[in-house]
Length: 128
Image (cartoon, rainbow, N blue to C red; front, side):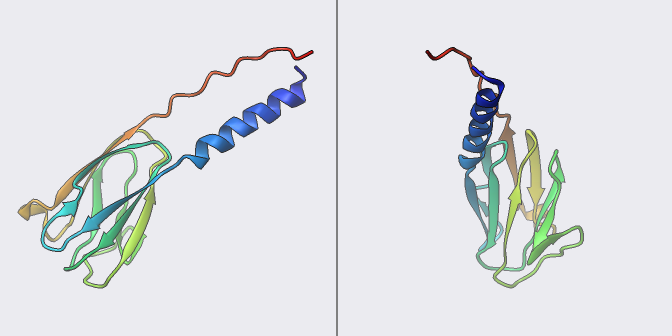
């Protein structure tokens, strides 16, 4: 197999891998809950947090992907009562713990386990 053909196969494998990324919805509120409060996702997936009622934010308190969101994701987003929605990408494996800053003491906490992607081992062969 020519080097060009190997490159094309590798490129196709990488594109196919990213095409399978999934977005996982998490409802923020109403009340003092995240639904679901815990997720297991794959590296490269996204999570969309949507405020369903109440004055909330989503703040990652530990883990490889840190964020603080409400209305838009910046480092200083405080709880907000508007109908906001934010999508976060998780490029790194590990566990991310998050909370609503205003209601963590009431149990409004959650976690996301980001599983590593196991690389596909390609075999080369000759075609006559």
